[in-house]
Length: 550
Ligand SMILES: Cc1cc2nc3c(=O)[nH]c(=O)nc-3n(C[C@H](O)[C@H](O)[C@H](O)COP(=O)(O)OP(=O)(O)OC[C@H]3O[C@@H](n4cnc5c(N)ncnc54)[C@H](O)[C@@H]3O)c2cc1C
Image (cartoon, rainbow, N blue to C red; front, side, top):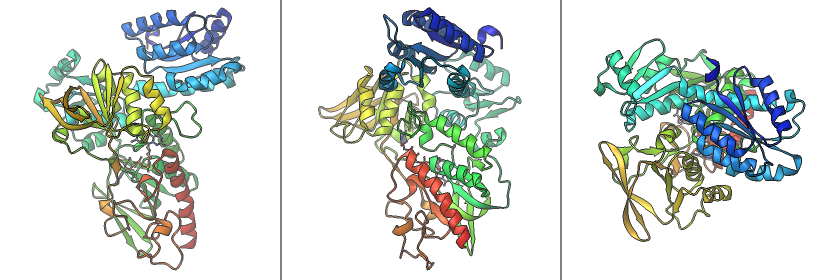
């Protein structure tokens, strides 16, 4: 990479000695990979960032002193966020300012606050900055990457391919055929007709016209193949519960395989910022959590099979058999069902037809960048909707939330309500619901909404729906006892419900001995990342007990 294309780290401090020291240490630790740029005030740094962005240069990290005359570090970082939203943000504080730094975490979406002095840098600075840069690099590599996908922004097939690549962390660059001259040129060179989109151009020169996700996954080697004939533990679902079980199962010596239908991370992987997971005071994005957990599970020896759907479960004697959508079967001593819940679909007119073409379920973070200056509507009043609104506020021109209830207080955490109130481009409309979605040229253009003042039409560019979720456990029909909504019963809830053994079922054991359940799919579970992780970890210890007793 030529030196001038190295991404930048921008340090700001009004005290020349401190600024020089930060720059010196950053240069020593990261100077080979990054340009270290300095500014002596927030205002100068903002000008510098605008210049860098105009030139198309990447900014990886911002580091700013809190105490600066004219503009405090937090105020600077808030403004910088609108210029370089992807850059990691670090605040330099004196011990006396710790409270202010913690209070600023939400407004700034701070990634770290660093106490002055940071000596020795090998312990106090380098590991922290390295971790932040690794996370930034993972995101940047994904966007720069080898696979190129060309398609129409408002095509469901194009959206699904992009989403699949992003969620499976395959480095890929998206080119919109309508906006991008390079896309049209590439299509001409590859000899692809416009009606054959989306197209994926792979690094080995292969051109895949209108590929299915499975085809693309197989060509890219994402899906994986089982390496063993028999496992101690098969985990169904790669959300937080499944990933935790994979980490503990593999680390405790169980032959463990995890099967995931879409991409590791589950619902949590779609969260723009999880703020209440223990040990991450500044929060972490769902994709970061998924990346860390997936790497950890793999490193400890768990196998991961993705883009494969579990479609059946059988118990034959001591054997447990899991059928895969591709036709294969996995044999195991124990199975953990950690298949979570899926978004509920909005059944108002127009929504089904426009899904993927302006209507999205979940945060669909791949769409954020395309929403610049646009009007985004978020439907729902719970935490997931609140997170999405806060997230899109950084990218979109304006964000309107449609909330069916009379207020957010009943359904959303206080910290999110506070964050929404600090985003001037977010409007919350309570007692309002979407009555219909209307499109033009195959993409969403308008929403018909019903509120206290009657029906009204909103011009919109994209709409993200968060109206709850339900388990998809039909494949367990007649095998494992479920409640009337499809959630799986476990432990004390299954006693007497066809339970075949003398001993009581273990706490997370289903009505089939040796088949366990963890996370959101369990009846009466607490729908949180931490509880899913806790149950996934606990399930492994119950698997050990089962194997000892068996
Ligand atoms: C946008 C959003 C934001 C959230 N923010 C927070 C937050 O800030 N804090 C918090 O504590 N909680 C948050 N939650 C809730 C939290 O994400 C969930 O409680 C948690 O992810 C549940 O984990 P799980 O592993 O049980 O299930 P899931 O996360 O639902 O994962 C289940 C996985 O199983 C896969 N799967 C399903 N069926 C099959 C099958 N048959 N074969 C193969 N794979 C299958 C799915 O594709 C999925 O990846 C949020 C949820 C959402 C949607």
